[in-house]
Structure formats: C-alpha cells, structure tokens
Length: 126
Image 1: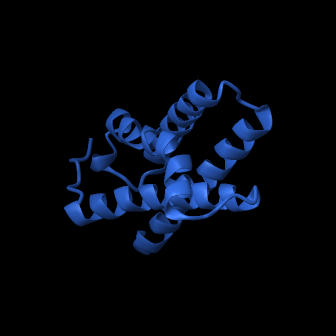
Image 2 (image 1 turned 90 degrees about the horizontal axis):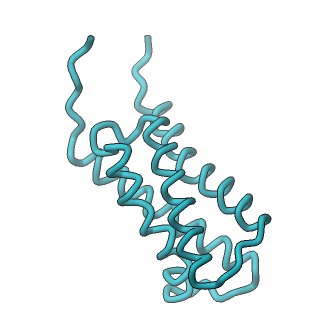
C-alpha cells in the first residue's frame, strides 16, 4: 500500500473552479442552443440546480483528496446530473428523456473532459 499523496490546496481550488465553470458553460451552451438569453441571470437560473449537485459530489467522492482522478470525476458527474435533474423536475414538473440524455452526456464531457486533459498534462513521463 502506498502512502497518500498530499494534494496542494491550489489544485483543489482550481479543480472546484473548473467544475463550476463546466456547469456554467453547459448552462450557457444549452440556453444558446434553445435561443434563450445567455445573460448572467439566465445562465445562473439554469445552472443553479446542477451547481447544487457539485458540493454533494465533492463530499461523496471526497474530491479534495484527488480531484483530478477520473473515478472522482464520475462521482461528481453523477451527483450533478441526479441532483440537477431532480431539482429541475421538481420545479418544471416534466423531464423529457432527450433532455436527460443530452444533459448527462454534455456534463460528462465537461466534468470528465477537463479532468482527462489535466491528467494528460500533469502526468510525468515514464
């Protein structure tokens, strides 16, 4: 068994910021694709249900320990999707299957994609 590596606080802060940015970009792209306003209030209104899933995913996955690991990203992604869609459904009283698929796939690309890129960049040769 190897000893746990210490994750720098800056890495945790950047990872949390990247997750927030990923959800905001998802929301902005979604609003844009539906010809809705891409203003700050509109994007935040769309993003809030999904943003509420972020801290849950971070807590369940203990993301602060290894925020760049893909399994951690999967935990965060699942929490964001489940909480976000659950809250959205509670307020809109509908949940089209196409929205579920598009939201899940898009959020996977954004939340797991930046982690995969970061791992490639930070991986030491050899």
